[in-house]
Image 1 (cartoon, one colour):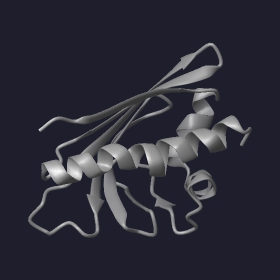
Image 2 (image 1 turned 180 degrees about the vertical axis):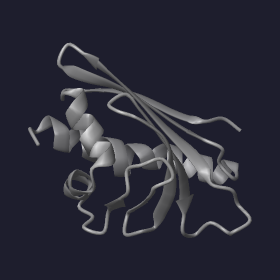
Image 3 (image 1 turned 60 degrees about the vertical axis):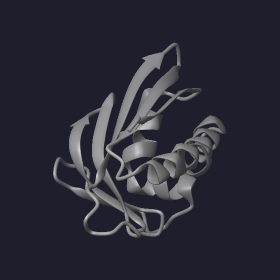
Image 4 (image 1 turned 90 degrees about the vertical axis):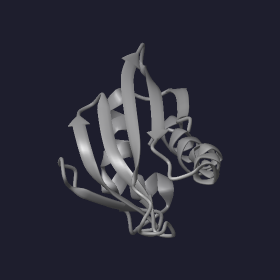
Length: 133
């Protein structure tokens, strides 16, 4: 099964993009989700989208690499968690972002998340960061 891979350039400093991915208050602001919770440490947990998405942090290398498991509350217990990896690099006052989401339980979940990353994550985060958050 293929991974979901997204690459975007955001007109914001790498530290701002890192905060948008790791700081619960910043996530709550751009996601409009007051229930966002983040325990930013390896093995620490997070919960997003009204606690519908949860997981644990696997790698944290600020401000360039973040990796965590991803699980939807609707997934059957038999399904393993998928894996999300963010790679950030600063480029002339902007931030180049590569998102890789892998290890989906099936093609339907992969296809659903492919569009969902654009609509529910990347575009709202970019809009928030580029309007001067």
